[in-house]
Structure formats: structure tokens, C-alpha cells
Image 1 (cartoon, one colour):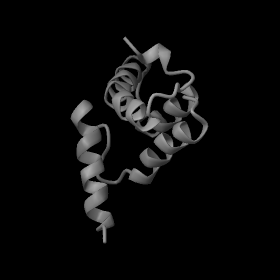
Image 2: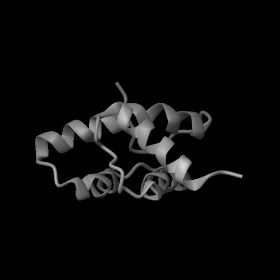
Image 3: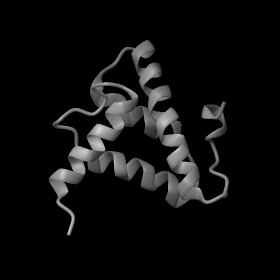
Image 4: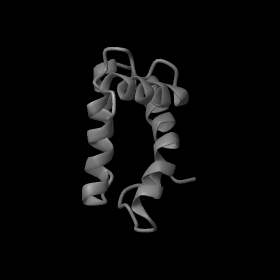
Length: 96
């Protein structure tokens, strides 16, 4: 059995590794899981959904761009692993 609070804490810690404070204590980690799940279910990355994910932080465009790049730097390997060699449309912009 998984302790939901512990799983949420672990998720926050992992996402905060790429940018300190990106996921705060009161952030619903289900949103993060839903974001990744929506990408994998359609095999399409939607940049607008990424912007929507970060919108509650009310960042200026420079800080939002930094946060998006940091998130995608960490998320890209996970998505590629989950894709198991299949292409995810729209990710090329974040691959370097």
C-alpha cells in the first residue's frame, strides 16, 4: 500500500531538484502526474499544457522560461523511458 502523503512529498522533492521551489507544499502533485500522463496517452507534447502547469506560480516570462526548461530537462528522460523508443511529437524543441 502506498502512503499518498509520502508519495506527494517524494514527488515534490523530485520536481524541486530541477528548480528549487517549483513545487510547493500546497501544490497538488496529481497535476504533475496528470501532465505526464496526458503526454504519454497521446504521445504528443503540448507546450500550452506546460505553460498551464506553471501558470499558478505567476512567473514573469523570463522566470517562466527558466522553469519550463528546467522542468523539461528533468522530465525528458522520464518521458523517453516511458515511451520505450516510440516518438513523442513536440518534444524535439526540448531535446539538445
